[in-house]
Image (tube, rainbow, N blue to C red; front, side):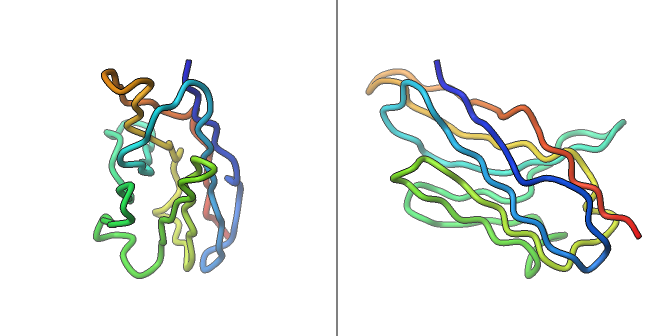
Length: 120
């Protein structure tokens, strides 16, 4: 069984920074793209940033220039460095990974979510 465990959420004032981490563990053959998504109550979950196993990245327009996604392929960990945080970044942040448990089977896995609150 594969698990994604997030850490690093919390409360911060506008303009502050936070770093989220997400580690994948369990039966893992390989991991394709990993990403961060966020959701606020009453709205759909939206993509924040995605990184492929070769290091290519994509960001939502709302976070470009402020957030940086990175990954450690040895430790199966993905990070999200969030700078210049704004109140509208407040959400539950979820880690996602497209993980191959064997050479022939894969699935999308989600972390449990971590709350990020930006408020003065």
